[in-house]
Amino acid sequence: MANVKTVTDMTFQKEVLQSELPVLVDFWAPWCGPCKMVGPIVDTLADENAGKIVVAKVNVDENQSIAGQFGIRGIPTLLFFKGGKEVKRIVGAQNKSQLQKVIDEVIK
Image 1 (cartoon, helix red, strand yellow):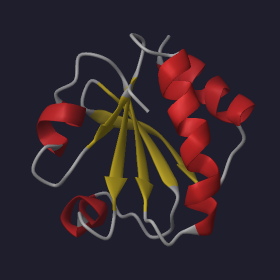
Image 2: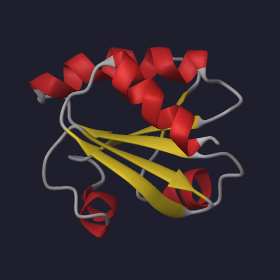
Image 3: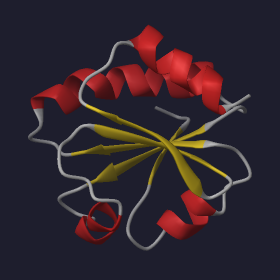
């Protein structure tokens, strides 16, 4: 998990919206079963795509402001940002190859 940033309401602007690289943000909560399945996949993808995409995690219980701002209704929700704008949204658990395909599209 060395390549995964923990982002909060206070750091979201700087870490995500102002990032030079595209950013994958994993909105999750510790009590969420599907989040526990997706979490390790996201961690692996962060390591495998280091230098091409930034991977960040937002705990929705602790950061309700940013979750509300982006209309996060169900978790896990993965948002992809490029140039400070949301370019892709995935709600629910996905497998590694599906997520890698989206990362490849976003980093083009």
